[in-house]
Image (cartoon, rainbow, N blue to C red; front, top):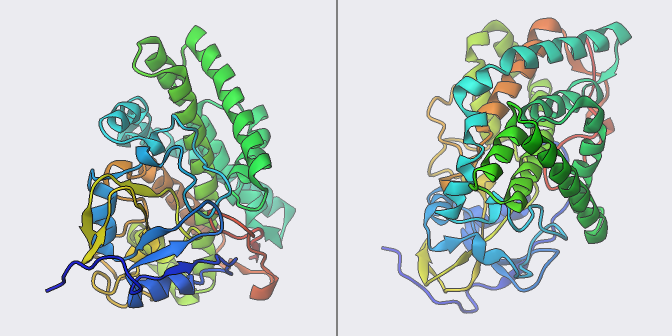
Length: 405
């Protein structure tokens, strides 16, 4: 039986010097904590002090769903973290706890229902077909980041949001700055301010002229008194930035995984009905981010994994390590398309479970199906060491993905 232990020299603070990793390499620091010290104390490159780091599947689920661990309590504290800045605005749903979180989330939920998202599939497929036709016309070799993974997720989430095509390049630039640790705090805050000003203006136009898009929904919520303008802007900024960037990188990671696992790719060509299950396994397997995201703060003393975490202490948890927990997943470091029981946590857990999970799956299906059906001989056009990977990124992914067919 596990017993509760107080903090002592048994839990030294370990500095997590987060390195830029290539491809699908799993962070060795994270793997070591999972297997050797599943509840540990760490210090990250930015912020102050240290935090608890929770890695095992059941412990991660516990921390991310128990109301005694608060996101709201993070505000105003310079906690240790990877990024030099906080991504969301202070009013964002990412910082909220229930019942405030429930109220904020409700305002945008109807944009992400199964019925609403399925209406997007034909448009997403048409956009993918057009982009791949242009790529095919230009001829090989081609960079999939330029021709598909960059423009398609940006177009899809911008359609959901109501951001017109002529504003999307600026939106992409702001997002790339905001979701990187490499530009510095001042540049990141400038990008956040620019996006906030943009959505404040767009929200004002939608209040005067209602529309059937996400900005229209939150504008209506502000008119009805369900959201403040600041809350609506914070929601819009978080969804636009995170959705486009995350799908851009993770869909590229999926294609890279398939191109570097030719037997898996051949099987999907032979068994296309396996694709939904394969996508779930790719979601579990791919280490889609560097380090950890937003932390939580314990509001009272709580035991986690046999360790007593005191009220006021900061806790980071990792969905990536949870997805590699051998107590839950057999051979967790292997990519296995026969893994039928796959309760991965790639979209989070608890109140902050990703609202756009179904949209991300839809886009992944469109991208992979289109490539597999259209290019039966798709393969990398350069040696692995010629593929560049983003540096100082919060969400991992390739800078270029050269292919031929």
